[in-house]
Amino acid sequence: MSPVPVHINIYGPCMSGGSIILQVAKKRRISQNSRVTGHYGFTEDEGTSNPKRLGSLYKEHKQLTLRVVDIYLLKAKKVWLIDKNWKIF
Image (cartoon, rainbow, N blue to C red; front, side):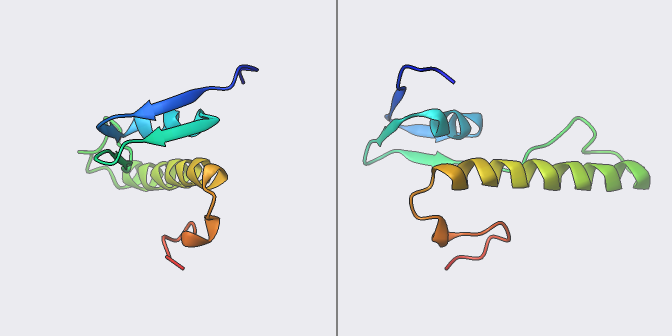
């Protein structure tokens, strides 16, 4: 929400939460040998065998994943490349 434009330069890997932080930049520069990656989140309950907890974890993960996809799509210049179902156009 800064009134000052934020510019981010990437030199090397920009992974996980770093790729989300990158989305706030007004101008993004990524060096030729860099890579930007994201991943599904996880919680401390990943090893649970409780069926009810597994169901709620699934719903939570789905909501978080859709939110992250929304963040990326808002900044993408070619939003037609991918949709929320991971279909590439």
